[in-house]
Amino acid sequence: MELISISNVNVRYKNGVNAIHDLSIKIKKGDFVFVIGGSGSGKSTFIKMLYREIKPNTGEIILGGLNVAKLRDSKVYKLRRKLGIVFQDYRLLPKLTVYENVAFALECIGAKKSEIRVKTLKAIELVGLKSKTRSYPDQLSGGEQQRVAIARAIVNNPKLLICDEPTGNLDPDMSMEIVKLLESINKTIGTTIIMATHDREIVNKMKKRVIVLSDGNLIKDYEKGKYYDEAN
Image (cartoon, rainbow, N blue to C red; front, side, top):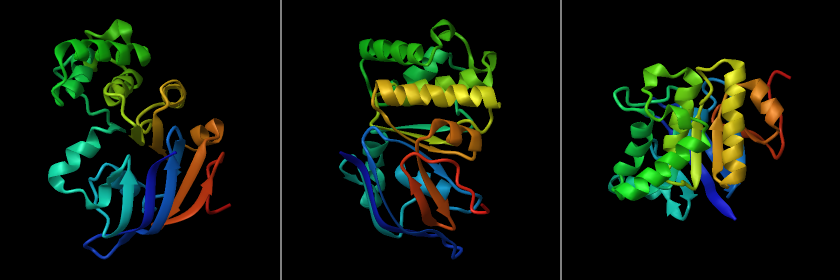
């Protein structure tokens, strides 16, 4: 069953740059997809379109039954509640503990205290940080901070987890650990995952679906692909 259907989408910035050109793609529920491409490929624009930070000029983006492209600004929260987003720079609140950082995502949507506690502890345990609930971000390694960010992103059981270069600040071993964690979440919970990355080794090892963008165009779409280099 489809979770995302993108049809004939174009994004043209005010400076005249065509960031996305006539893009059409479908992503099923439960998929794990890597999005790759060099600088200026349209990768970041593609990711930002999914959580409506960028609005396409033309075309249609249907995500979980919502027409993202036509969603009013006042209704964007309805989309964001269906999503979890993990960034390269973690974006944790420095004065809050691990528990408080994860719980904050549920507090923002008005969840009950009892629900917050159960879901927060479950998410923290799932990412392997049960012993760190009272720690603060500056007491954690980069990999642990990213695990907290992932716990916060999945605490409300989103349909889709969007990961924008989540391993960009991590060493190779820790990067692989984070991607293995994402794979586990994908398999055990069934969360659809879309991950933008430059990491050739991860893409080659994981053998997931690979979407390749270049100059705003979709140039390759492999079901079980390797890192695609235009030079080769």
